[in-house]
Structures are given as C-alpha cells and as structure tokens.
Length: 58
Image 1 (cartoon, rainbow, N blue to C red):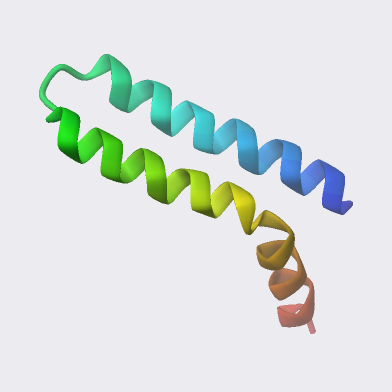
Image 2 (image 1 turned 180 degrees about the vertical axis):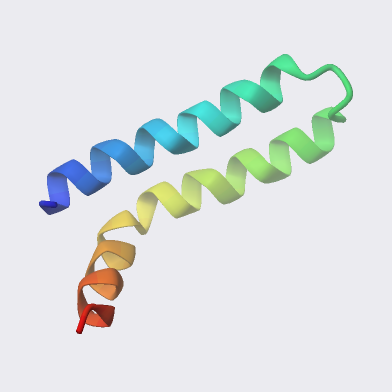
C-alpha cells in the first residue's frame, strides 16, 4: 500500500466516523466537537502514522 492509498483510506474512514456521529442525535454537540477536533488532528498526522506502520513491519 502506498502512502497515497493509505491516506485516502484513512481519510475515508475518519469521514465515515464523523458522519455517523453527526447522524446520531444522542451525541452532545460538545462531545461531537471534541471528537471532530481529534479526528482532524489524526488526519493531519496520517503521514506519520503511515511511516510508523512501515517501521513496525518485520
């Protein structure tokens, strides 16, 4: 898997989580905002995560 493929899949997964949370009326807006910020930071660091996964492979 290339870094571009990893990034695309990772972004799609994060967007799916965010969309599912947005559709759930039981989630408080404050919690939604907090999780959205965390997901945005994870998206920003996807190249770092990809590199860490590559280093972890034997």
